[in-house]
Image (cartoon, rainbow, N blue to C red; front, side):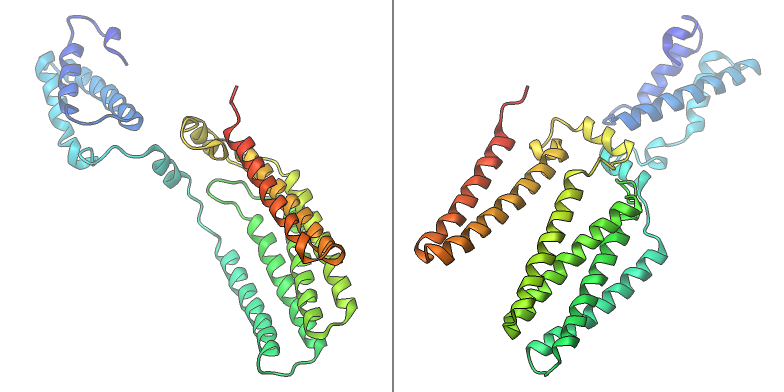
Length: 299
């Protein structure tokens, strides 16, 4: 309720002046201004009650103000202006589910046990190659399951990912890790089938992850989008536009895959003297992409 909505000779002007005095010296924020207007409405209702009981308008206004007590202590108004982002984060914060925490711990224990087998095989113990491959698969599946489970959870800023897409991310993670494990077994045994399996599994996993990343839609919650819009003037382009950051990440992955493939091809054909040019070209391409995406003129 504003001043103009009250009779010019009534208690409202006196009440508004007293309320303004209460907030003198307090740095105002949007939340504090909303609080002040809520207090104003309550005071006007209280003054109306006091006037109806026969109290003088001026005395009613002062009495209503006095009944509020010390707002600075009660509402912590003497401290710094609350950050809108921090308060919104606290209001919308989502706690992880106990069942999810238990599953994460269990998967972590399984993955750690499988990793321990591989470390022992590479250092002091003689473990059959079949057991090592089983450890690789268990480690990859545990990491993939943990990835999918995490993406299915609701977070403070994001909605949960659909189970099918989350499972796709988990499968891609498991494939890439299995491919890396097969490559490690090839380095230890020099058996060509391990190398073939490593390349196929890694490429399929990378392709799956790249597809899912390129087709990923925005899962941000409405309050996050509003907060980002209110702070759009702060930060670089990647901060303002998460989609641009995601595109740059995908372009970087593709660029280095091509550069590494060219590096291997030049090493096997032209020799070490020329193969390093592929890595230099990949780095130069990534820097040019970064400059174009980050510093291009905005409409």
